[in-house]
Length: 375
Ligand SMILES: *Cc1c(COP(=O)(O)O)cnc(C)c1O
Image (cartoon, rainbow, N blue to C red; front, top):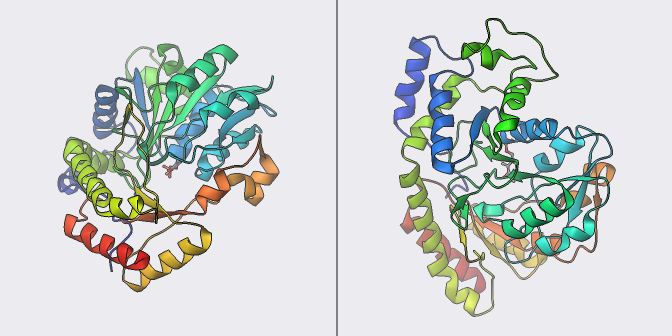
């Protein structure tokens, strides 16, 4: 059986975690949390990175920072994970779903502006599969309409658009370190903050509404409750687990990219014969091989395809049920414009195994099974 995902692991994690335990330093904002945030700041060029308990929480934190109010509208794709919508709907805001582009499965930048109303406050581009949304256009729309941009870059670490790291374009960017992502701490995430002016408030909300971060830096002599907040700090043990992977981030990234390229070379003839479609990476986008997917002709063919793969010991999965068709999506959000591609394309997509540790030989084997289905 070839698994669909195996969580990433770097050997040094065991030593680092043991160090946390020995030093009895397992609470938040310890040495490994700092190492991880510093690494992310250096690699992405963001002004400030705060490690969080998840990407969902990083997005909630960003929603609080933009002071989103009940009835405010937030533009996002319906083809995304539920967290993108939850973070805003939790504050009473209305997710306004816009159609995606069929080539990248990303928010269609050409359809955003028509969805803007006088209640719109935020645009949330989701960089699906680590392939960037058309950020020049999105940032231009945001500027002209005075909207905030919060990037759901859950899948986007180590990827870039025109040479700039994903997660650093918008006011805020959100990474995920869930075990299904390229780098993992079990459960965890990061908030990237673009503007210095937002840093202090972000630290306050993340620390239960207190100015404790300032206190720890010795900038004030006691800390107190200054605003509403919550607790978004991960344990330093989780950060230690992640840091071991960040130290070899390039090696992990290159290994994933070579698997991705192997899939591509293997499956290109099927795509050229018009039997399947392969992912598109537009010019200017450098991706991180977060996932490899193919598109079948339709839902019926995809169902048969996934069953065929399973019979041959290979787990292939699909996602997402478009949010506007889900019960909560209908209750809390609405779709703007026409659903030309969201539902149709989501029903055709099947993901193939992709993880650090998968071998090129296994990819060849998987592709052989794919070819058999289409022969
Ligand atoms: C994984 C993922 C999330 C949620 O990440 P968590 O760290 O599990 O909260 C959000 N959005 C997208 C697009 C994701 O892929």
